[in-house]
Structures are given as structure tokens and as C-alpha cells.
Length: 416
Image 1 (cartoon, rainbow, N blue to C red):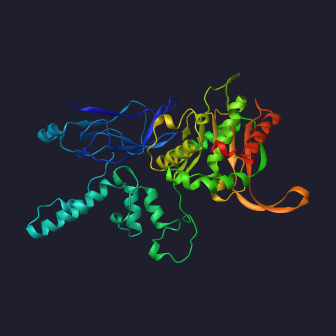
Image 2 (image 1 turned 60 degrees about the vertical axis):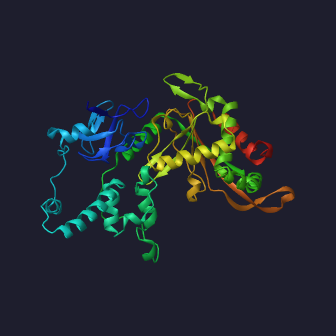
Image 3 (image 1 turned 180 degrees about the vertical axis):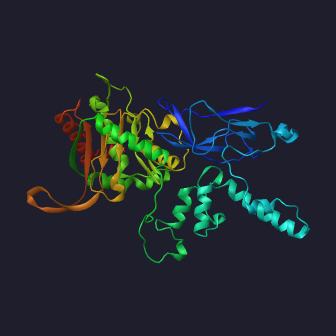
């Protein structure tokens, strides 16, 4: 029996999704849980796995088309049925162009057996590369004369992702062996449409600005104690498969403060204030194609090791489009870290319907005044709390930040 493949609901509030690309084409065999197509919603970009093993017999939604959740986007038939039934032979997908001249030439009968063997081998290699890369990745590879077989793929089943090839080329778009000096970003004179994710981000940011009464409070925090503990324990964490970063300490300090000050962990529903029982912290992850906020559920119940593992896992799967729907929903507070790029601080926009967001600046050594008016060099950073003044007053916001600052500057080694 044929099986319908439907547009999944990637979160409770998601009503539609856009098919970005088809990883498989009509006539391809697919295994259960093998990536079938890629979608984009206002919450997440994700590769959708096949619900069963079989043959892709029909594609009903073309690339770039947006449909409501639970709409049928494709049909998968049984392998035996597809092979035995002429009607199940591959047919063009909606909007799929006719084969170009090169493909038509390859389809002609081959007269030279030895040449056929060589061409079959080449075609097999080409098919293998098609299976482990997207059209965009292959175009980038062609433009820069990159052999995809030489790149280690970090995607599902070893697929070469956009991040993989861009990482290989570097920010300047040049292969490592050919890179002489840094080049400017961007292409002069180029006009490209916004991606689905970028349009949704734009809508959310404008909506948030119009909805919340944004106010920001900046605190300077000393990281000497945290840096000392981190140096002492980072090797131990690495042996446990985690990386102990400043962000891990910040998340822990924030979750403890949120538990004691639930108004900062709340949200607004009309004229009501919703106090959440769980502390679910979203961590903003910068992607090549936009920004996504995976959520660490019940973050206040995790220790430093657990938080470090969760951050690394969610960030890695976000970049490889492997997040599950419930991993990008349900956040009650968000942390964004522009400091990783060197920013001293920023003024982040609240992630609706939350009422507060923390921006983390770059931790760097700078001179400060200590006891007896002496000057010392210490690792310091600015932490910025953006909050909704409709329900959070300035005094409350500053009390919250004072708790975070006090925890970080007087960290108890016994809690690591």
C-alpha cells in the first residue's frame, strides 16, 4: 500500500511549512528515517526523514511552495510494487524542468562496451555525490572547483552540508591551498530574495518591538573566579565529553536566579501574567542562513556538566538541521551570545512571548580598580538584560542581574 508523506507540525504554534528542497527524487529508493526533504518554518529548518522504507513514487509539492501542516507532500510505494508496476515508474515532479542536453546524451544507447563501463563508473560516483549533497552544495562546489569526495560530511549519513563546504572554503570563498589574503564578504550588485527563515525572523523582530516595552540594563561582571575554576576543571569536563565554557557558568547562574525571581521567567497572555513552572532556557545559535533558538528544557535541574552537554548537542544539531520540533518551542527565557564574535555588549530584542532576554558580551582582560585604589588586570564582561517594562520594573531587573553577577563573581567550587 502506498504511504502518504505529510508536512509535519514543527511545534504547537506552527500552521504551515515551506519545502526548501527535495533530497530524494522520484524513483529513488529510501530507507526508513532517511532524509527525504528539507523544510523551513518560522521556528526551524529541518531535514524530514522518510516514515517508511520504499520508493518515492510521487512528489506533490514543489520546492519553494508553502503548504499547511498535515498536507500530503509526497507518496512512497513498496519497493516490489514500484518495480513490478509500470504506472509506478518515475515521473517528473511538479515544476521539475526537462532533462538538459547532457542528461539526454547520457540516456542514449552506448555502443562501446568498454566506454560504457567507464561512463557507468563515473555515473555511479556522480550519483553517490548527489546522494550525499544538496543542489546548493554541488553548485558551490562547481563554482569553486571543489571535489566533494574530499570533504568530510557532518550531516545525516555523511551528507556534505552547506556548513561543511563553506568551512572548507573559508569565509572568503577560497580553497585553503589558494588562499592568499582575506577578501571582503558579499557580492557587489547582487539581489537575492529573503529565505523563509529570514522573513520570519524579520516579522518576529518587528512584532516584538511593537509588542514589548523594551528596556535594557547593562552590568559589568568579573570572571576571575569562574576563569580559575574553569582552568582547573576543563580537562575533567573534556574527558566526560563536554566543553566547559563561560556560557555554561552564565546559564547556571541565570537559571538559579530565574527560579528565585519567577516574574523574569514569565510571559504575558493578554492582560494575564503567566508564571511558568519550568525554567526552559533558549540559546540563540547563529547559522549561515539565519538564527535559531533551541531550548534547554528544565535547565534549572541540570548541573554544569549537563548544561555544557546540552548546549553543545543542540548547537551542533541546529547547524545540521537535525532538531526535533519540541526542541525549538516552550522557551521561557533566552540567552544570546554576541560576545563569541567579539562584541562588548548588545541590546537584544525579546523573544516573544517571553519577557526578558540576556545578551552576553565578550569576556576579555582589562584594567579595573580594586581594593586600595590599585589597578589590576582581570577578565571582565558586560551582561545586558533586555526586559519588558510592562511587567518588569527597573528595580526588579537590576535585582535579577545583581543575583547573576554575585553568583558569577563568588562561584562556589563545590557546585561544579
